[in-house]
Length: 74
Image 1 (spheres, rainbow, N blue to C red):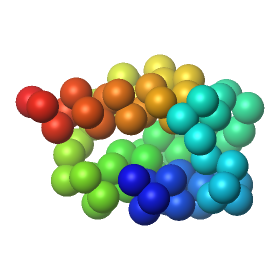
Image 2 (image 1 turned 90 degrees about the horizontal axis):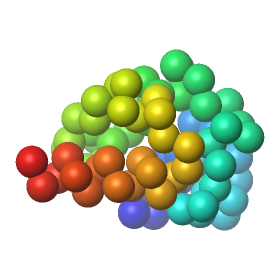
Image 3 (image 1 turned 135 degrees about the horizontal axis):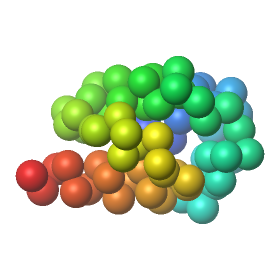
């Protein structure tokens, strides 16, 4: 999970220590480029492909983690 948090920090242009499950994505650069970058990160780290529309609707890091968990179960 640390690799995912570090990747999200890079995508959102934050310090990796700031990435917590409750972090509000809307407060940062959560745009279409960030969504595509997150899809690539998740594919790289977890070997699962997330739905872009579902990912774009996420509002926190915890929402992304829930999507990852659901995708891993499919």
